[in-house]
Length: 174
Image 1 (cartoon, rainbow, N blue to C red):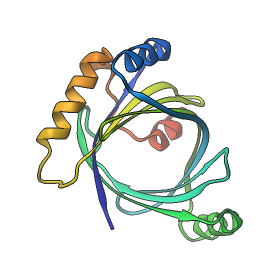
Image 2 (image 1 turned 45 degrees about the vertical axis):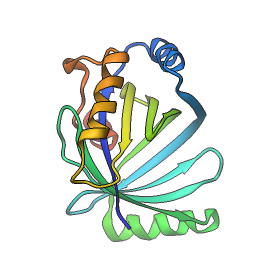
Image 3 (image 1 turned 90 degrees about the vertical axis):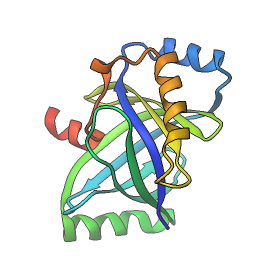
Image 4 (image 1 turned 60 degrees about the horizontal axis):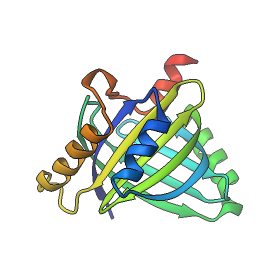
């Protein structure tokens, strides 16, 4: 079943400042994780397999417009047993082809129904992602207010915004 987020991605020159701002706003830390995302070639949307340093494997399919600023993302996540992850990745790679591989360190914070990711993406730089859960894709006003508030508190300027996925950024720098 599809879920929806209203999200933005922005470059960050100072993740320490973002951490301090999040703590002062009362955001709860959710952990720091090493993640590898393998993006596959698909005709529409994006399909990736995510592995984290704790052995969790997920298949994630999402559609999000490449826009600077808040964009509505429709996504589906399926947990995969770790023992099947390698085999499934090999099958998907043969059937679809690999578009990009992204390695990152992700630090997660939460506030109400918003997840804030502080990401160090290998070869691409440091980023902040804000993902506000949108219970109904037609009702974006409440999540949009939270995203706007966080954007201001985290001092995210228009020139910091990024429209592309990490997979697209990684392809450009490789």
